[in-house]
Length: 266
Image 1 (cartoon, one colour):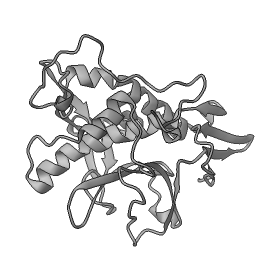
Image 2: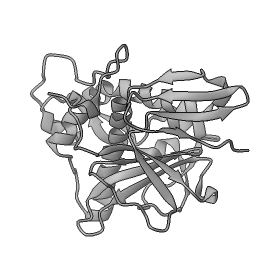
Image 3: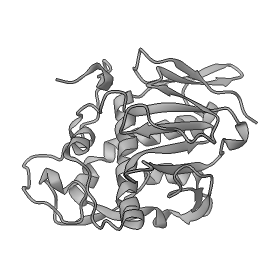
């Protein structure tokens, strides 16, 4: 049985990311979802973050981002093609395309400002799953580069969250991160991988899109870099952006969370 933390919003059902029947009973050795035993025989290039989102911040095919710092502000110029790996089979990659559409809708609402609708609704559980997809892609790279683990694969529990809509651990998932020091707010695309200091295992990511910073964590009460003056809010009910003619509001369906209001910026 599902919990209320992975709710279904009436009229806005969760994205179905299960590959179509019949099940293939094949595990591609390079696909991180191979434990599900439902792969195709073709491997595909998977962007760490949806290509459509990367393009919003790219100039001449180059984006300023941070991929491997554990929360340090250390940006690099990377081309769009350098932001992908062959880590999913074609079948599982296509199954997640609906979550990429969710990520694009979320990013467009933040990036394009007044050109977007005044109110939109995105199922919060699908936002979590999109950020989980980013986390798992980065985890493959992190474990290879930092821990010497080739062909890392996530737990079956996380795969079931991503592909089969299982709920995350209690208090794990989507946090809105409000940073007090405005100088730390990046007006670019920033992705930071967060790992546990003792075990060195990945526990989450911090993603900044303009002034909006999201902490996604697979564990409850995730640690925050003490050098960053920030507050975290779990499952915000809405993200609101003041405009001259009223707020633009993104509703998540998490009715128990607070409404986050972002200050107007130049």
